[in-house]
Image (cartoon, rainbow, N blue to C red; front, side):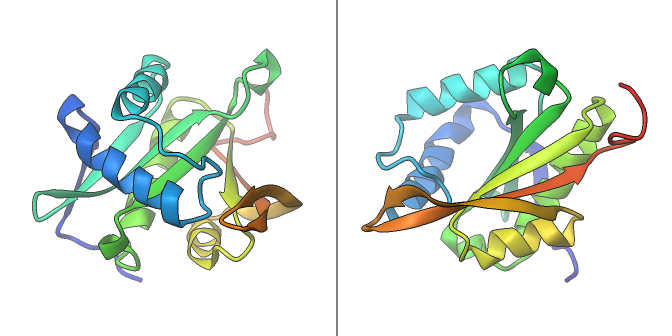
Length: 177
């Protein structure tokens, strides 16, 4: 798939959070990518953003024809110190932006930035083993399946798996940090 050339990526800004909230709320209410069942407030999303960029991690938005159509970021995988070289990615697109290569563009940029920052592993925890789009996106960028937790959540009236996939960044585990 060729990447769209009419998409602009940039760091998220304060004025983006109304649209980010709209996109995320859609996924929370109607999808299984997030295990949240009630959308967080716009203020909560702003706080989450501040925590991510406060660590120097990327939080990017995609604009198509001047409209925000998706976002992606990397956050710490876990808080305990031994995990400090591992990050977890998130990618969310507006429904009308799916299947256009925008998620690939966003995630590629987040991967590149995390590699530049010296992180060594990126993990994705994908809600729903049936989420072929997200699993396919990650596989296309070099992630490999490392496992799943069956029935990890109960959402929208059914049990939902968590799929764990991983990709080395930079030297990965071939050399100390």
